[in-house]
Image 1 (cartoon, rainbow, N blue to C red):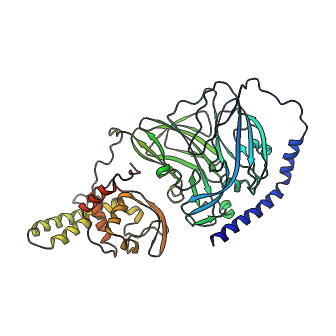
Image 2: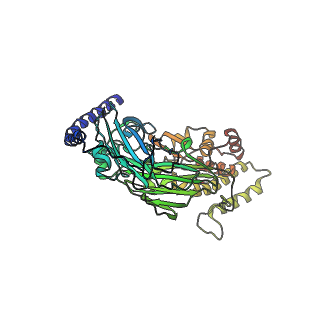
Image 3: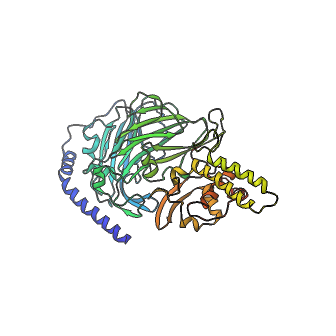
Length: 516
């Protein structure tokens, strides 16, 4: 079935290529005529340009090194267009159209005043014609008219980098939205003559949308859905071309006290990006490729086809979450990344959690219902502790009431108050056949280490991420798991503090809490 689907999609793309080649005949002919036109004279030479160099290109999230020369040069940039099948999400493949083999395309770094000689090579195995529109170019189409290139061909044009700033580039071949929607975008930085202020680390991050024929998480090779694209209903909204491209071992890294500079772009093709770093204030933002900075920004809006330079210093360690603050895009469609910061704590800047108390909002002065039950049950235990076998049962009841408080403070937003979960997103805990199949140790591991990947609960498939809750104490974990194992039709014995502590020691240092 997968081979049939792949063959069908490739056949469709081949047919579409034939149509577009026909539709673009005039564009190709015009480009050919332009190339064949007699020269009006010798090629002009800029007397200010000295020396020739080949541009260093990098793939996201990496950035080429700063330019240290003090004079403009002739810079040769060569980019190859590749149509490649790669991972979009776990179990999901997609045929990306790319500048340089990855999404986003290669990061290009030049200096104000440079004379750029641009070579666009369209790989012979590609099915589509392509070109490039660089927003840093002053000239018709930003280079698009001069770079229209059929498969197996190469085009060349030159431009002078007149305006400093961070600019987007993209394919501009019809249908433009489809080419961009398949991943054909990237960033070019034109450094000002005086250079940028020093930064300890620079990273390259781009947001983009993908409109697939299947739903989010549907496995196999996915095709492009034009109806979704024209309705602006993306299946995926991601950073750097795929779900999870900036998490786990792919997270960005930094150390305490360092100045971070992010070159952030939005390929679109449709949606604006509300870029935000959870737990940080953006010290300086250069919006819209401009030269006038703004300061102390919480969230900066980047339109499709736009970019921003974002700078901030990190003061305390932990994991900082990069998101599009249109939050369903972040937590349900993939626009989420991580910046891991190492170094010593500064408790004056941020203390971490200082108090963890149960609060349910009812009868606060006299204590919550759960607290009252805990107090009453503890008193009953004290009376019976020397002789009554009911003690074990009462101890479990105390754990359940304590666990309910932990659950209502930590877990209920995702799993819902009665453990019903969220259809299609968060699996239910109530009457869960999946939980019933787990050993007690698996419950504890799930809380300490988190869980990701596809699971089937009560006949329905879920594919999400549960973040580690290792910042909870052993007693809190034991109590909340006892509550879950004893509620909503579930049946399980109590989890003890000793069992949690033993397993915590065995699994070693768990991943850090992503919210601290």
